[in-house]
Length: 280
Image (cartoon, rainbow, N blue to C red; front, side, top):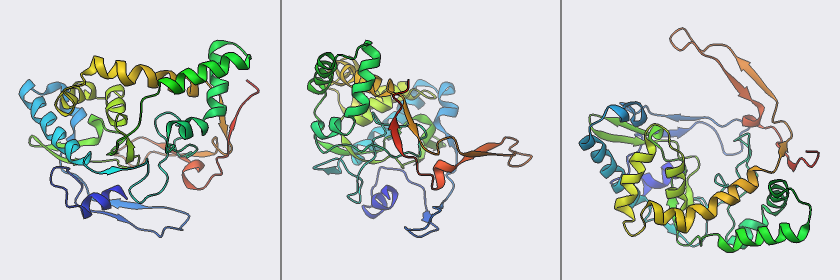
């Protein structure tokens, strides 16, 4: 969806795959997408061997891509088609196929959608059942939560593994399934906290260019230290989903790729009804 949107906007600095086709209908039980292959390798695979000059070159290219991406804005959090944007930041459940929570249009609405989980998570973290204490802690989280506006188009999973490079050039940014119009700070927070394959060093250079008025320490003070406690409270709540344990192992794919994997029912139609496990 986001790929088609960016293609239609004729973006100049955001490297995309040449083609992406959905080989199914919107109401089909099984969804299948065919993508052209990007030439080159993941930036994460070569980052540690690069010179300082080469790293700066890639950071500059990514800075141009994000600067163009963030020019697309929305009055509220949503997908590019106007549909609800699933929360992959705070209310992210396991299995990942579970789409349980969405970004609220306001901080109040966002917290209201997670109230049960946050309350129980806080109760467990502070070892109390006193509703006055829990209410006070929840209000503190809400009061300190950073404002979301402006809502900018966000990749949502930007790291060096999702950046394909060849001959010193970024040829494609892939994996846009979490993309949508998010609070202005989401891309910066996720890209700096998911440090895979040199991502932190890369994104540190990128954000120094994109928001020089807000260095890493200032960003942590303004945003990071207020987001992390909310994520910790939600993740402290034990959550179960019907069908989350239904999966099948598959054998090795082929001789040249001798590893197996699993097919989770959650990925193709399990109910995945979400509930808090108060038995814990």
